[in-house]
Image (tube, rainbow, N blue to C red):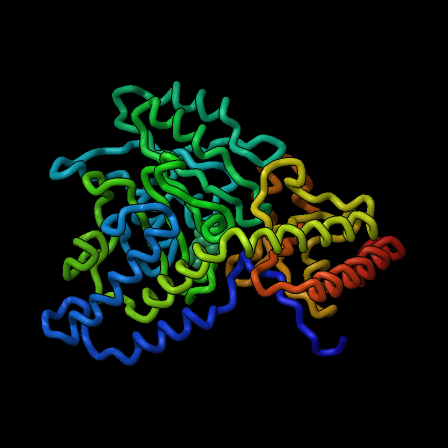
Length: 388
Ligand code: PLP
């Protein structure tokens, strides 16, 4: 076993797909600027537009409604703006409502002042509390401009899928706008902007096997757009200035194409592996708590707590066993904080949770290895009260 590493942290980032690497290398070899009119420029432009079609297709959007950004975090900061334009007319959005389980990219509220942000509670099962959202929207002052609501499609810690279509019905019933963070859902469940009835989606290349540092904001239509976050030379139809990250965008497009083609097959296999994983965990430690097991989840994520094992201790213990996983809120700069998701669900945030997330390259042997590690760590915890 010595030296063998098992990567089960696909929600943090996915290894680069070969197809994405090849598309990136081809793009790096191109000399032109996509904004130039000569043939080198037009060749680079063609790559950007190909990737735009590939990204749009993955989420059922119109190609011209995709705005490339540096990351999904940037896309969130672009969308979460109190200032929009409807065609040529300015539109003011005075209050932002975000679910209590959003990723910090959304939870911090983009360009809204802290006092203009209201949190939407979630149920103990980890789904947005529709009655709470309805009450907040009913209390939204009619003369205060339209409400902007941001809810993720799948949570990065638990994998729990949110009832976006119902949320959209409530938000649109009040004339509001709905921004959906589809970063963890894209490539794992079918994502279609029209079926979700979302006004905007964000996705990120590196969660799909594309490169880190490429993302997109995808709009439902083209008349209603937020004021740009980055102004410059008019790229991305003026919605995002700056010369395009050609290689990043090309790799992003290639990864989206593969994710779309392999969606069903990949996730069917991953779901079977997760079932084996969770069954094995329950057998080795019947007191394991698997968060969200009773509701709809993306197929690759297992977020669990083990009584007697603090998440940060567990993370190190698994790492020593050769298993890369995350403690709940470990996604920012390596620090382990308390999981705001567990807190929002009313669970034991001091104990914390550990996240195993699988990907298309995860094998049955990886799961066996992770289960053996789990059993050893769980047994040790019983003797000492914590994993050594
Ligand atoms: N939203 C969710 C749900 C995420 O999991 C992440 C990344 O961890 C982001 C947004 C941010 O994406 P990016 O790394 O492209 O900024």
